[in-house]
Image (cartoon, rainbow, N blue to C red):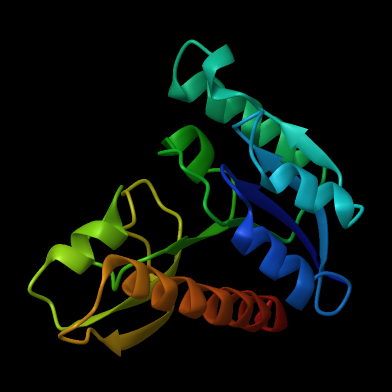
Length: 185
């Protein structure tokens, strides 16, 4: 069975979704790594019996040192694919040149790259919004698109309803993107 390492920073809702839809069905999540020692996703991974590694970015001098440590940690698990699911770190070429990874981004890339994508997309005049799964490269949210799903923003949309639509699509397309990549590899 193919092996995945998942990287996350927060509550781990996308990680929990992968545990439910992928783990022991289509692939093994051999490790979940977070940069945040207080991340809610830690408990979700441990409850599923998945080893958790904490690689706290505040303990490193710079992004390159952090990324080098992260690469070494990932290599210990020899994954077929690394999945960034809510991992809130900008990665340097130290990482991107060595690790085959995909990222989940809450906008229709190339629109709204970087932080606060949901809010910026919601506040924009764009009528068609959505979610992207893409390859991680040196360019922030600039890698080749693997899968996207869109929806039409309604006139009476609130940020809460908009965010709920984004989260629902994330939970659909990240597992689909992973399964298609692992099937082809």
